[in-house]
Image (cartoon, rainbow, N blue to C red; front, side, top):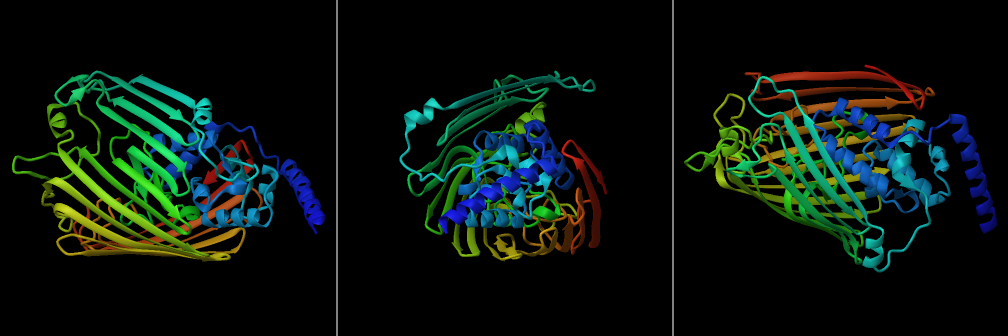
Length: 501
C-alpha cells in the first residue's frame, strides 16, 4: 500500500506540473506587483487600510514563507486574500497527502490561478520539522537587518510650514526574535520644542516567537490585537470591508506594530500561550493619546491625525493617558472554536463628547468595560460564525454579529450576515463589520455571492440593507439605507486583469 501511495503522489506531482504549464502561471511575477494588487483590492473594499502595515506584514511573510505542510489555520489566515473555504480546502488536502511541490496547489478545487499567483511569494513546501531547542547563536548568524529611510517634499504652498517629510525605520529579524524601531516627522512639525525631541513620533518593539513548548508570541513595545469578529478588540491592518470572500473573517491574535501610523495600536506588553486545544492571550497597554484636554479635566474626543504643527496641535499632543488591559481565551474542539474576550479601558481624564445631534449615545466617562463571546463552526462546505458582546455605557449596550457561509460547489460561495449594535453600545477598541466606522446604533443584513464557473472570469455581488434608530453625522433623523454592488473580473493572463463594477 505504501508503494502504491508513493506512486500516486508522484503521478499527482507530474500532473500538477502539466496543469501549471497549461494554465501558464507566472512564477516570476514581482512581489511588489502582487502586494500592490492586494492593496488595491483591499482599498476598494476598506478605505481604512493601513498600507504601510499591510506591506510590512506581507514582506515579512515573504522573508519567512509558511510551510504548507505544517501550516495551521492561523498561519494561512495571515494571507488576507484567502477565504475560510480556501483555507479549509488547503488544510484538508495537506492532511490527506502532504505536498511535494507548489505546483500541486492547482489540484485544490477552491484555488484559482490568481489565488495561487498571490500565494506563491508567501508559502513554501518543505518536510515537517519538530520544534526543538532554540539555538540563539545559530539564530543570530542568520539574522536579517533592514534599514528604511524615507524623505520627500510635499506641496503645501498655502501654508507657512516647511514641506519636508522624514521617516526612519530599522528591523532586526531572526526566526525567534524580531526587534524594530520607527521615527517620523510630518511636514510642518518642529524638530525641537515643547513635547518635541527630534522626530515627532517614536515607536519600537521586541517580539519573541515559539519559545518553549507553550509560548507562541511575546511582544514588548508597540503591537496590534484582534479577536473574534472585532466587537470588543480589533486593530487590524486590513478588515476586507464588504468583499464577499473575506466577510466574517478576522485575523486573530497579536502582532507587532512596525509602522509610523500614530494611532490604532497598543503600547505595552502582550503574550499568547497555548496548552493543547486551549489558547490564551493577555495584554496590557499604557500610552498617551492626542486630545483637547480642558482645564476641568475633561476632553471631547481623541484625535487621530498625528499632526503636531500649530500651537493648538502641539498642546493636544499626548495629553491624555489611556490604559487598556484585556485577555482572550479560546478552545478548539474538532470543527468548533469558541472564545471569550474581556477588556477594560481607563483614562486619566473624563471623556465628555461635545453635545451634537448625532452623538447622544456616545460613551462618557473615565472607565469602560467590554466583554464578548465569539464562535466559529464549520462542517464540510458550511460554516457559521459570530460574536455576542456587551459594553459599559450610561446603560449597558449589546452587540451581535451572526453569519453563515455556504460553498455548495467549489466555484460558488454564498454569504449571509446579520448585525445588531444597540444605540448604547460604543466599545472603544471595536472595529467590526458595519456601514459606519463606529459600531453603534446599527441594524443590518448583508447577502453576497461569488461565482467562478467560467474560466478566467469571476463574478461577485452583494446587497446590504441597514437602518439607524438615531441621527447620524450628516443625517438629523432616523434613517435606513442600502448598498449594492455587482463586479466582474476578467484575467486573460497573469499580467492583465480587467474589472467592471
